[in-house]
Structures are given as structure tokens and as C-alpha cells.
Amino acid sequence: MCSLIFYLVFYLFDPYPSFYLFLLQIVSYVMNLHTQPRSFYLTRHGQSIYNQSGKIGGDSGLSKSGVEYARRLAKYAHEVIGMSRAGEEDDSEKKVVPARLWTSTLRRTIETAEFIKHPEIRHSLDSGLDIDWVQFRPMARRNLDEIYAGVCDGMTYKEIEMTYPEEFERRQKDKLAYRYHRGESYMDVILRLEPMAHEMERTQEPLLIIAHQGILRILYAYFMGLSREDAPYVNIPLNTLIKLTPHADICEEERICLMDKEEMLHDGQDEPITSMPASLGKNCNAMYSINDPIMNAPSH
Ligand code: F6P
Image (cartoon, rainbow, N blue to C red; front, side):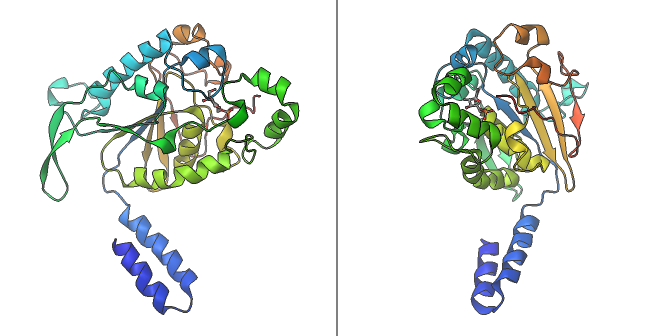
């Protein structure tokens, strides 16, 4: 609100509004600064029936392995994301902290959140006000729905290549700008995610986002400072939580595997397991700096 008033006053009275637009961005940046670092936890939904058969898009439910991931994710959410002193030895000091949960509106993400409980807790706001807080209150956000593949929705990559060879070729050449016929491009997805990324920046509580590969690539790229061109190739495997903690100059990353490598080798992963960093075995934690992104080679 303050920044809006600031903008209006200077925009109306200044002959060089672009300078004040710049100033507005600084004000907005300063207003979104946090004294306490807070984390976002990004994960794809558990394996879906479509993932199992290599089909893209659709609105299928979870496979057996996907349901198992949902169970483990709920345990992690309660024991780590919604707890203070996470990861420390002394359990007696742990206490429940308010946390948020966003999913897409698609069945596979909502089912992945199914085992997460929503007890009511007390939350002391920065203003000193105490409120009742529904822990991990589920918010289904349309902006988090997977990139829409239009006429290719529900097909495998092989079927797309055979039915629409030229389209397939065009996407291979320019994955960022390519727009599926009657569907979306990654550029479209970037546009619809931008306000959401700003909203994430303003969030005070730890935030768990259960979404989709294409969507998480863009959010990841935004916070890790990757280029738009690189974003469509970021490696976002199934069964893995990506914890991002933005600081002033870098964004810290940790990847937490909730299934072990053996389990993943047999669950019909839609991405080659060889594209995962070798260190990502059971209970692995890997730290990457902003200059060390994990990228997928352009695959299909
Ligand atoms: O394969 C799973 C999926 O989430 C599809 O629904 C979606 O079209 C695809 O990933 C996005 O990945 P890419 O842009 O590499 O095709």
C-alpha cells in the first residue's frame, strides 16, 4: 500500500516517471526484506498414473508409489517443516511452528497433500497479535497447474513426435518460446507465475508447495537466479523435496530424497535417474550455490 501511494505521488508529479518506477522497485524490494531467513519446500506430486505410462499432462491420480511418497511427505512436513529447531538433536526443544501449504488444482497434487494434518495452533504475529492458525491449511492455486500441452495433453513424447513431427522439432529447438497448439509455452508459465513468486517472497512462514515439473522449474530458476533459457531444463525429479532458503546474495539449496534410489529405479520415473546428481541417494542432502545449478540436458 505504502509503495502504491509512493508511486502515485511521484508518477503524477514527475516529468521522468521511469526513475520513480525504478525507485518503486527499490521500495518494494526493501519492503519485502526479511530479517529472519525463511524456507520454501518445493516438491512435485507423487508419481501419477500418467507418469507411470509416460503420458504428459492430464488429471490422473497417484500410483501406489505416489501414495507412499505422499505418506512420507506428510511425516516430513509434521516432523521438520512445521517444527522449529529442525534437524537438531534435542527433540525436547522442538515446537510446532506455523506453516503453509499450496498445491495446484490438479488431482495428483491434492492427493499428495492428503496425509498432511491440519491441527489448529496459536500463532503470534509480528504485530504482537495472537491468532488461531490452521496448520498447513491447503490452498489449491490454479497458477500452480502444470504447463498445458493443448492438443498434446495426454500423449507420450513418442506419440507427439509421431503425430506432430514438426511441432516436436520446434519445441526441441526452442523449448522456452514454443507454445503447444491450443496450449501454453514456458514463457506463458513465467507470466502466470510471476505474481506468485512475489507472494512467496512476502511469506513469513515456511511454505510447502506441491506442484509440477514445469512449474517448479520456473520457481526454482527465479529464486536461484537462472536465466529463462536455462529454466526449462532444470532437473526436478520425483520423490524429492527441494528446500530453498533465500539470503541477500545467494539462495541456499538442499535436496531431500524421501524415497531411496532402489525404490525409484523400479517406479517408472519419467526422467532418467542418471540425470540426478550421483550424491542423491537415500537421506542425501546436497548444497548448491547460485552458480552451481543442477541442469538436465535437453532430453526429448
Ligand atoms: O512428464 C511430466 C510433466 O509434468 C508433464 O505433465 C509436462 O508436460 C512435462 O512434465 C513438462 O516437462 P517438459 O517441459 O520437459 O516437457
